[in-house]
Length: 334
Image 1 (cartoon, helix red, strand yellow):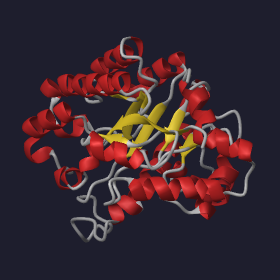
Image 2 (cartoon, one colour):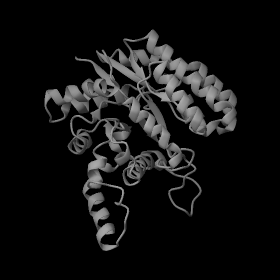
Image 3 (cartoon, one colour):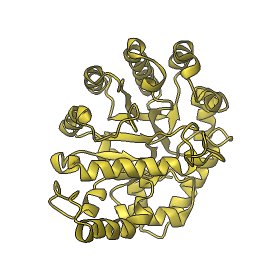
C-alpha cells in the first residue's frame, strides 16, 4: 500500500495534558471525553492501530478543548507553547509515524498568537496552525483575526478549522442543554458551514486569495447543500434586495470551492463522493478524526480507508486524496 497521510487525527501530549488538567479546573469541560479516549496520549495504543495499515502517517493536531477556552491569559501562552513543543518532539522522534504538526495558538491573545505562529513555523517546522470556530464565542471573520489570515497567506501554509459547540448549547431555546449528542453530530458540521460562510461573504477569501483553509468533516453541510445555498443567496440578493455579495468579484459558490475538506466522515462512500463532486480531487484530504471511536481509533481509521478505496474515482485521484494533496499543501518533502 502506498503512503497515507492522515491530516486530522488528534493528540493530547502527556505533559500538556497534565498541565491543562491542573490549571483548567472545572473549565476542562471535555475531561470525561478525553479520559475515555486513552489513545489521545498513549502512544503504544496509537501505534498499534497505525500498524494495522501499512504506510500510515499522521499530521498531529491538538485535541479539544481549545486552550483559550479553559485557561486565562496568564496561562494560555505557556500552555500553547508546551503543546507545540511536545508535538514538535514527537515529529522529530517518530518521523516514520508523524509527518508534521499543526500549531496550537493562544487565540485570546492575538499578539501572542501571531508570535507563536511564527515560532512554531520558523523554529519548530510546523506546517500550519489550528484554530476553532467560533473563537472565544466570536465569529471567525472578526477584524481582530485578520492578521492571522494575512500571516498564513504569506507563509502559504494552511489553517485547520475545528468546529466548536458544547453540550451547554441547547437544541431549542426552551431547553438549557443539547440532548442525544446533537451538539456534536449536527452542531459541529453547522459551525463549520457557518465559519466558511462568514469567511466567504466577509470578503476575507477575496482579500487573501492565497489563504489555505482545511475544513473538518468534509466541509460540513456545504457539499450536500450547495444548490440550496446558491438558490437561497440568489433569492435574498435579487428578491429581498440583500447586499451581502458586495465584497465579492465572483459567484459565492466559487469561494466555497477554495476551501480544502477532509474525509473525516467515519466511512460512507456516498458522503465522500458528494464531497469529491463539490471540492474536486485536488481539495480533498485523507483524515480519520482518530481516536474518538471506543476502539482506540481503529474503527474510524479502518472505515475511512475502506470508503476511499471504494470511491468510484481514478487511482490517481485516490492517491492524491491519501497523500499527494497533503504533500503539496503542507510542502512535505517525504
